[in-house]
Length: 115
Image (cartoon, rainbow, N blue to C red; front, side):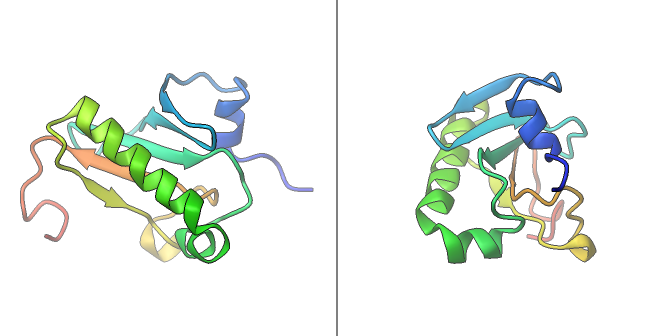
């Protein structure tokens, strides 16, 4: 059996982090290494899916819930405009293999992340 992901450990309270929003199946926290003035993570409570591709194939309703939560936290923590990024695979920068979305907002320019 594999070790629980850092996100599961946060959800269990084993690693401190402020949950800034939560639904029945997902939660949002601040990224510990922000890449933008607003950098939040939206994470499903299940470890079942390692990537967004697996999530989309296995539970599109949960993917929709993640996008809805991302929209809600962007509206609360910025002006509502945001980028939603899923890193998929090590070559794309994924380091935690528990699917999660990066919500980036605030002071982003068209050039800052590839437009």
